[in-house]
Each structure stands twice: as C-alpha cells, then as structure tokens.
Amino acid sequence: MFSHTRNRTTRTKRSGSNLLLGIALVSGAVFGAAALEAPAHAQKKAKKDEAPKANYSKAFVAAYSPVNDQFQAEPKDNAAIAAGIPAVLAAIETPDDRFAAGNLLYSFGRSSTDLAMQRKGIDLMLESGKVPAESVADYLYTAGQLAYQAEDWPTARTRLQAAVDAGLTSSDPQAIIAETYFSQDMNAEGLQYLADALNKRIAAGKEVDPIWLKRGISVAYNNDLAESAAAFARMNAKLFPAKDSWGDAIAIQRNFNDFDAQETLDLLRLARRTGSLRSERDYVDYIEVADARRLPGEVVSAVDEGLKAGLVNSGDVFISESLSTAKARLNADQAELPALERDARKPASTAVTAAAAGDAFLSYGKAAQAEEMYTIALSKPGSDMPRVLTRLGIAQVDQGKTEEAKATFAKVTGNRESIAKLWTVYAEQKAAGTPVETAAAM
Image 1 (tube, rainbow, N blue to C red):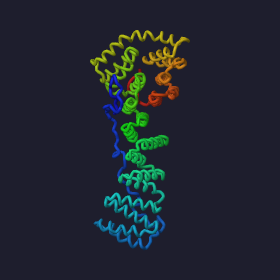
Image 2 (image 1 turned 90 degrees about the vertical axis):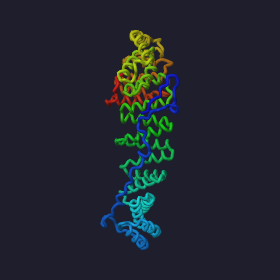
Image 3 (image 1 turned 45 degrees about the vertical axis):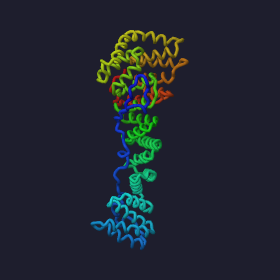
Image 4 (image 1 turned 180 degrees about the vertical axis):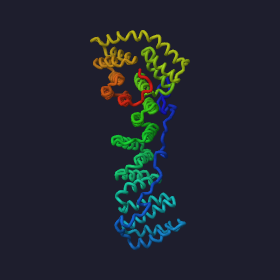
C-alpha cells in the first residue's frame, strides 16, 4: 500500500517520505524464471518411424557410443562421463552429430544438476537445425531460462524473445524478458517492454497476471520513474479495481507530483468516490483542501464519513474545528446557491463567478447545475481551463454522462492531465457497473 505523508505546511517529496508500501513489491526472484523445463524431445527418444534416418559420422559414433553407454548405466560415473564429453564434441561433423551430442550434454547436465552443461547441450541442439519445428519455441525458452540462471541477461533476452517470435504462448516468457532488463538496471527499457507486452495481451483479450502490474509499479516507483509508476498503477486500478489498487494509484500521483490544494482536492474526490480514502491522513488532507470556509457542505459530509469509518477522531482539534466552522457556514452557504446561479448566468458575469458557482453546486452533489455553471465559465475569457474542465468532467461523471466526461477529461492538460486520466478510468468503470463505489458520492 502506498500512502501519502501528511505535512500540512510543506509538500514532502517522495525521496523524503516515510512511505508504507503495503502492495507486494514483487522481486525479480519471484517474478523471474520458473523451474527449468526439459524440451519434450530431449526427454524421450522419438520412434524410428517418426523421423527420417539420421546421418551420423563414423568418428562421432565411435566417440559418442561409450560415453552414452556410461550415461545409461546405473549408477552413473559422472566423472567418467564428463571426461569423455570433450572427445564427443571434437568428433562432431554432421548436424545429426551435433543434435545427438547436445542431447547427451543436456541430459547429463540435468542428471548431474550442471546448468552450464545443460546450457551447452541445448545450444548445440538449436545450432544443429534438427530440432523439430513444432518444438523450436520450447527449446528456445529452455535456453533462455538457462541463460537467465547464469545471469547472462543479453543472451537470456535474445533466446526468450526468439521463443516468443517462434510462437510460444505458455509460460509467460515476457515476464522473464522484462526481468533481464531490470537485472541490468535498464529499468526504463524493461518497463516499456512490460507495458507493451501487457497492452498486447489486453488487445488480444487475454487475461493479465496482476503480478506483472505490481512488478511494474514496484520497479518504476523505486527508481523514481514517475510516468511509468503512474501508468502501471492506473492500469492496475483499471483492470483490478479495488480499494487498494485505487488507493495506490492515487497515492503514487500525490507522491510524485507537486499538486496545489485545488488539484489535490479533485484527486481526493476521486479517492472518496472509489472508497480509497484509507487513513486519517487521507481524510485530514481532504478536509483541509476542501476548506470549511469555502465548501462547508463537502467538509461536513467528509468528516461524518471519516468518523463512521473510524478513521478520524472527533477529539482531534483540526477535525473538531473544521466541523464547527463548516456547520456554522452551512445554512448560509446553501441559501446563497440561487444567487450564485443568477450571477453566473448574467451576460456580464466572469469566468471566476461562474466557476465559483459550479464549485458550490458540485460540493453539494448538484451535478447538473454544476455542469451548467462550468460550461458558462468555459465560455468566458480568463477561465482556468484545466481546473474547470476537470470539474466539468466530474459533474458529467456524477450524472452518468460517460462519453461526455471522457471527452472533457481528454482536453485537460498540464499538471492536471494525470488526474484527468484517472478520472477517465473511473468514468468507464462506473458506466460498466464495476463495484468500486464503496463510498457515497457527494
């Protein structure tokens, strides 16, 4: 779980924060190579009628046969077998010689748990050109696993990508390929590769392993790659909507970006709608940026919600003072709504007047009126376009106007663009009926 460090007076950047990483930060040891698998054709001999007659050279047969006999014997004399292998390799003349030698080395390497021997064997078989076409991808995958175990990252990457290109669809080799980049501190490249692999799976309608997303978040976050961290967290919230995935996506935005109070407010409004205000700190920050003097209705409802959730303490001075101020302002603020609307509709009204009216209506959950006020504000010179567009989109989402909201959010630029992207994901989920709204909308 990613959380934002509370600091009322100074915006604390990520490098100075004591962050709680509740999300399982997946390590390469977990995310990387699985147990090595033997290619099917290296595990058993094909029947004679399933393949054309092999072309072995006489010299190779003479060198190979005694060593193979030693390998087949029980118990095995590993030292004797290892001593005979150089002669076998030296006698290779034909592609079939090379394949048979490779099979022997690979099999001996497995029985003696010698990864280097296995690697040499699988490479010889691939180089022979005698691997059955339907098995090439499996052999390449095994070769890639062996190179990964040897920490030969470039070769592992090449072999595994070749397996993918050869049609391997099982075992998720893309995960290991990404790890080869991370192991070389090529984090940006690895994240791009992982993102591309995820997008291809999504486009093909395939399931996505959440561990891929968590690994992407972990690598990007720990290496200060803000855009990648935000993108992976956003995808995680989109594909696996839950309190924690949304909370992480929002916390990562806050930890990497220097948002002002109004930007923070709109991000925390999203947290509230997705039920991902997870701590006292979240509620306190929300109440602070909403400001009991400006948006008393929203502050009262946020405090009430926090109290019911057991995440804020009524005895806290800041909470009690905010609630008292908001309640004292509430009736007068609500009574001013009709006048605010009339002023905003006047031909001579300003963008500031219309936007303020929109803010007031939005804070009371009056989305339709808020939408009208923000639309007026946008038509006036001097409008704070990113801010007004964000809130227009929120008002549209609250009314279920999904396509309109998405189009509005797409126009948001600057510091708020990343906030708008998260709101777009929420708009799509709300339209699809995804159960992420565990907190009541304002």
